[in-house]
Image (cartoon, rainbow, N blue to C red; front, top):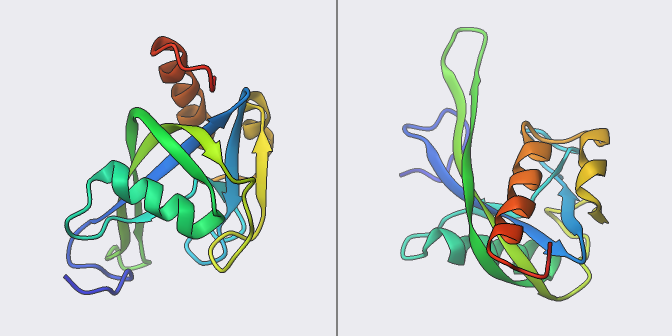
Length: 151
């Protein structure tokens, strides 16, 4: 598969992670299109040989310098964008996970323009990627169901 993310020949697999800490979630703004400047969960493309959870944790470390422990899979989100002619310009399948914070405060970098820890109810008031508030709420629900103190 080509590394070209525009006009892909097939959907591109990615993983993200909702890191939970003392009732807050870690969010970062994207620095590149699509959806640049919007808050989202840290994440990125899955590399060959990685599990979805491994990819999510690697991307978390690389993007914002945070360490976490995966609690579980939340759900997938599809980003499908077509151009004016109806051709698929972008198609990502992003597998979102919930995780408990271990270390790191979160730092900005080439892929994270701003990094914040926010209460789940505050997510809906931010400019975000599609369905982010819903994914965050589901991550907290999963953590509570599994008895994880991070929620």
